[in-house]
Image (cartoon, rainbow, N blue to C red):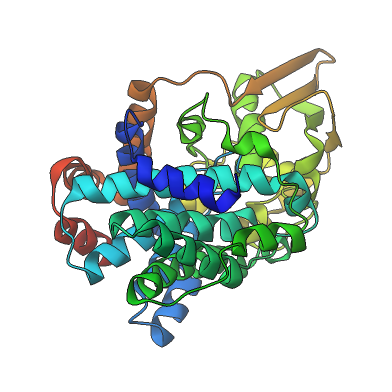
Length: 402
């Protein structure tokens, strides 16, 4: 079966027994990140030129701070692309039922993950940003499900998304990275509406995309023995690249003054978040050594305000950064980190953390509510939670856009 047909089947099957509560939590977290990101320069600049393109703006806002969820199988961020696309189409088509919207978000998120798995590591390693490429396909499928498109229309939407999908890893550390998410959200929303209107495309558009963009055509992506791969999504509790989080969680175990440290991580992260000497707050979000220095020096990596140009140029942190070595380790997964610490008294310690360690929905909810209150305040956090759990689309979009 072609990837196009697998995605059509996913949309037609619907969200039966899917992790809807988890997707509601993803929507809540995305909204928090989008509100926090709306005053970022890239969001403000973009709004001046594209005030009618809500999917583009909301997609960029939600990823502007790199504080949104990540799926490590997909190798990217799903909610930053799928949520704004689905919300934009729902608003445009006057679909107000939050249950339908959440179900569409679930289908789109699952489609993004499976498309990312189908494209595989080669696609990512050659330089494509999976958040943007497979994310655009997922956004298209979520919107197609929301619009109740026919199989032929869904196939057209997938093909149109494939011809419009783009995004490069070279944009990491610049405004171009969150813009990748916004462009993918806009692409997904537009192509679903185009397909509804009757615009057609090559039925094998996604197959061609994979063949021309270093896709691996991994057949295991479509294995339905694990019915909902989105259930493995990870949320962020530190305001930086997710590749740094296992290391930062491990550093919570440091017990004294550090004289030297070696961080061991999966080789993939060496080209993603190992900027050795970032000059800006945005660059710090992609630096093992600098975020480790922040954690060791008591600078909160959960606080958005910590990732500033002043932090990047702090002499004490730069000195501490110089004591930290980062090494690739093939024995670790992409969700693991090992840290070898030498203290000034001569003692040593090895600390580890695995982001794949089970996290109950209750624990995840508690931590994300704590994050939300810290980022947007208790009152707005509570309003967002109510809107996502049972409110209306108008209430949610008003809170995000206010």
